[in-house]
Length: 159
Image 1 (tube, rainbow, N blue to C red):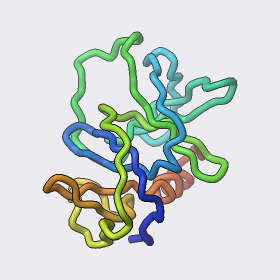
Image 2: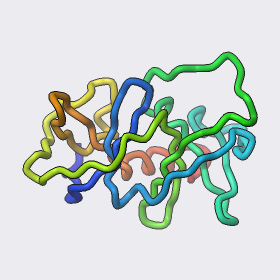
Image 3: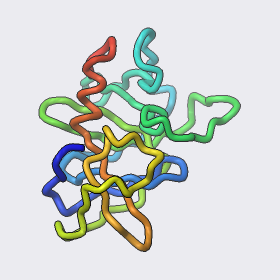
Image 4: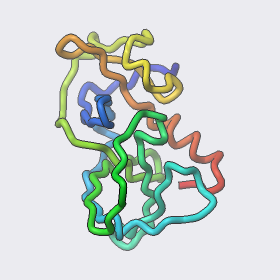
């Protein structure tokens, strides 16, 4: 487990039945994409849905729940007009659009509320978690964006 993020503001998202915190400094923007805007790329990690044009740049689109091996609801048929909600993660010069089920808002926590103990949602691989925060009787995991980007570097395509 890596050291805890210093930021006290987080963007809370839902991935199926799991809530996840993203450090606000790494969540640059929320995007709504039609599935038809995402062009599949063969030969990449299965959770990488493809690329989309975002302000003239190609942006990798990742199904975050699938990448973290969380259960996700699947629809029998994917419609091109289906709307996808994505959080644009940015770390150093890299960007990645992470598909989420829903947005739960911005939350603020004091640094004292952070815990590095592995007490959060055990459904999430701890290598992608930088810490945990207790909120309303449940432990929320904080996404380790560095680990996420780092693991994608080793895949056939580098986002």
